[in-house]
Image (cartoon, rainbow, N blue to C red; front, top):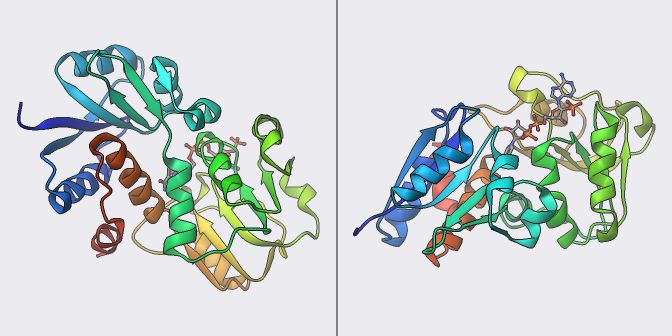
Length: 272
Ligand code: NDP
């Protein structure tokens, strides 16, 4: 075939921006790819992916709720995917094997450091949330050599599990929101899904250091409620997760095609 097929697999998936992002990358780089959104029933992930592979699929992005199942399906995994326990990028080898990677963390790092100009080295980072997305970003954050990472979550056991898994990478601790006390952080990342419902994680009033930076992994057309909270609490700046989404896609595209697209015009286009 003269066109290689890729897709994003999720449930729900119709809202996904991935087809628009990858089609923009393809146009920009001149790569001949077709990219679709594929809705898969929650109990049919592995069978559906094998069927897609048998029809010639070259790769897929995996979104909620299948990142862990994708990890389990893979024949081989990158070190960062192995540790995250989640795969967001699948590649189908010529022999029909599934290779799994996780580009969420590098996507966040690129957006924070390169697009937003946020300094991470020697900083204390607070992450709210301990779901699948947070597990996927810790490795990359440690690559930027922060002083420490603190994970606060409603379910403390989930935060503790993530902290234990990455303890050999650097200083990392798990706390309940109420245990944050008077500590103030120059960088806070919201990795909960609370902004989706217009709600805030239960952070103490003075948790953001004056002039700090706030990042919400959620994205929508207007600033999220967490970004508004940041503004009211003395943040120098804040950003939503759209840049992370485009950067993780760029990394996946580069893995598949061997060409790195320029993410900035695509971010600008999506911000419209
Ligand atoms: P999960 O469902 O795995 O985790 C959800 C997290 O939110 C948990 O920490 C959970 O706490 C917390 N949470 C949910 N409801 C409440 C509540 N009522 N009170 C307190 N805490 C709550 O989701 P993911 O980790 O996959 O995704 C999290 C967010 O990150 C989503 O908004 C998603 O859109 C975004 N995301 C963005 C990406 C991007 O590229 N920009 C990539 C991946 C994700 P608890 O453990 O106690 O239940």
